[in-house]
Length: 226
Image 1 (cartoon, rainbow, N blue to C red):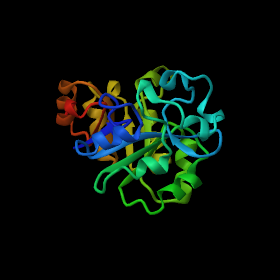
Image 2 (cartoon, one colour; image 1 turned 45 degrees about the vertical axis):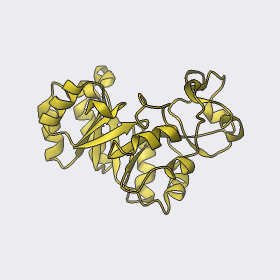
Image 3 (tube, one colour; image 1 turned 180 degrees about the vertical axis):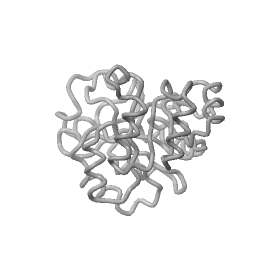
Image 4 (cartoon, rainbow, N blue to C red; image 1 turned 90 degrees about the horizontal axis):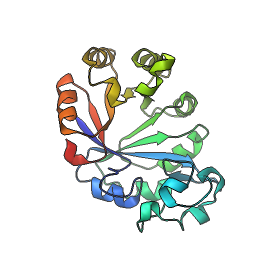
């Protein structure tokens, strides 16, 4: 079972920063990072489009040039929002990278950045268009993300697996709320050949139950949970 550091293990260092990746690297099998395009076109590692929660600044990442973004500080630390290429340089050999694409329209630039990267790479997204674009241009393994908040729309396991099949995904990333009491769904997904990585696992007791169900990976904010 793999341990995957959510946003670089966000409980241990400011999320999605180079420091987070460096701290987590010796404790996890893979780091998960969020990628979006900033206002000047570069691919940056940041979860939110709005800047306020992370930096206290106004505006959106998508409208802000990198020359401005790099001057901001993440969650009161000395860390800045990194370029994807710079952060990848901090990932040691043998540690995988789960790139979560926050929107479509980045496939060509993503593949250019990944060219020459020797680490195992998994590309995940909630956005079907984002995964479809990558799948059309590369043979990188893909993962479809889905969560329990979409149950009211009928978008739960059935929806998630259907989307993953259609996109030819190698993995599914269901939220922990969909998995704790649903071992039959985990088993069905694995029987279909999907790798099942569950997010975000915050308690050791939950980690133990999911391990007993046979999930393939746990996406965590703190490696000590596992």
